Image (cartoon, rainbow, N blue to C red):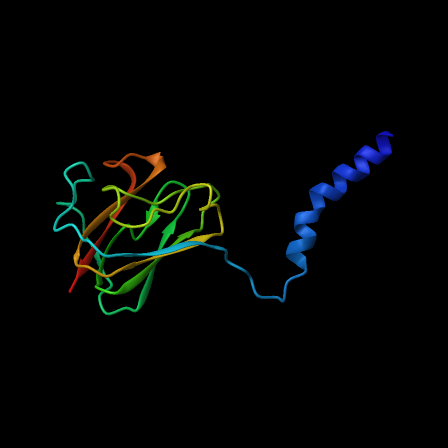
Length: 153
């Protein structure tokens, strides 16, 4: 009986590795969600991070850009893009994260149960404005794991 339980436990533990090994050689990156922004705020909400001292990385003119969620920070957290740009949020860390707009409804959030290590989600920012975001697992709306997307015409 003990051998059967051990064998079943071993098979269950190794099954995810067997499934991963059966791929076509191309690493799969699960996509957790897509969305777009239609109603833009003119400026960052008062309950968001203080953006006055932040330097935004100019990525205007790019068709698509990536913001990485690492273990306790976003890489390139403050970006400036052109309207219509697709932003991919990629979880490259070891921890689960989420990407939530400071202002509810500003864009489709990436929820933590879907934004596990190795996954990504995209948001297309159509309207000019400022869109602050944060990870509620590693920060608040004002400090910790925060960032913002500034969309220009």
